[in-house]
Image (cartoon, rainbow, N blue to C red; front, side):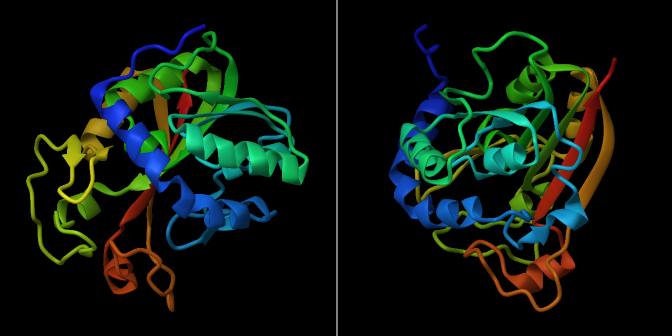
Length: 256
């Protein structure tokens, strides 16, 4: 089966991520070695966020898997994961790490907005950045709902809307303490220093989108950088993220 034609932003993001892929090999290798997951920029422990709890025996899909370390965490917890990613070079790293760690699960090349698998194939869907950042929420969230069985869970971690509103469009510039753009109408973000396209929408829009796609929202966790953290991103300082959330976790369940 041939791959469906990609939207313009997915084509751009594929090219960008194929170029960035070598820069993410080391973090992928490190995360594949973890048996106790940590999440996001600040390395929040799984015990605090509970992103992959109670997954044993579940059919799971990682939407925008990159080097597939989250899928590896799922597999080690007894789930049956499938990973899909838009970048062939990221998947090359994922397949090498599968072989090195002796873990096998399907890895698909494709856009998480249009997954080539049947309806109701999964009990659990997850994205750490991945689709939650680089795919259009108005497309990938309904697609996640299609893929999930009734009662299935969707967990995703992404940048907060507030962080996006305070992020300058300047190379290597960190978030500032003032609003730089309007919240109303926020959706698609393009940056002057690369050709990538990100997506982010306000909380109210996310709630309506999830509910309209057949989900009930179970939790929203706005992440605070832990005390004593040092910056792990050029785009946000620990001092900023101690006062405002630069990341957030959504948890939703598909209605029966």
